[in-house]
Length: 358
Image (tube, rainbow, N blue to C red):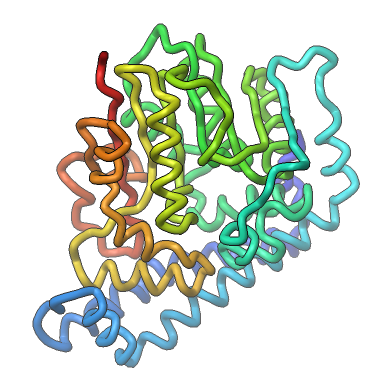
């Protein structure tokens, strides 16, 4: 498979490096300065709404918020142009599959995409992720920069599978809801080499790229276009059901329906585990997450943060539900918390629950 980054021209590389440097300084320099200015305004806020009001009055805030928004738009422009200039060869390789593929790709043109999925260009990506085969390449390359190059080789997702999922040598089936271009599904295939691994997503472009890359790596994965709220997979047939960074892109009712579907899929004793974001309890910190979501066209962050997922798990018949902080840098699941970090970072956390034994 072509790695676009290895083909970047000097001008393209310079643009990517500039955006990456800008994003890093926004995170490790501008954000701490904003936090210091906020602390000087008085006692700790009583609520996220109170913190948000104070945040928006800070002198540095317009600069901080503008930098975040503009760097994201610069990112998609640079990455999009790099992909479009190589459109022919990138489209061709999606069809250049082995004569005897190890996995399968099941596309369904009749899948109905809900309005909450199509009404927003999520992450400000023009055309979002589902509109064209090239959009999957754009998202894949852009995601490397968004994560400050710390997720190369899908490190976050490997840490998730290695530290947050159970050891199940005899696992027979694993399902990944909202698999995108396969960044989460391929680590699952490594974690459970004897299992049938199924990735489900609305977006055909992402699935086509996921399938092509899995075949290039020799990974036997089934990719299906479908709705994570209604997968069509048999009841009680899965040992593990996962999702990474998908619930925060759904309205509250869709989150509830997705958890119910995960519970339906699990065998007795099976595990559901979602890598997501979770409120930190620090009103200022959580206010910056809400503001980030609004600038980044992620309108359902507030829905997720306001939803009692533990209660939803219980209502779905799951037990032992809990949230555990997740350190994406090196440790993975981290029960003792996120630690003291000066830079802006996502409040990663793992939601885990189990299906009771009969």
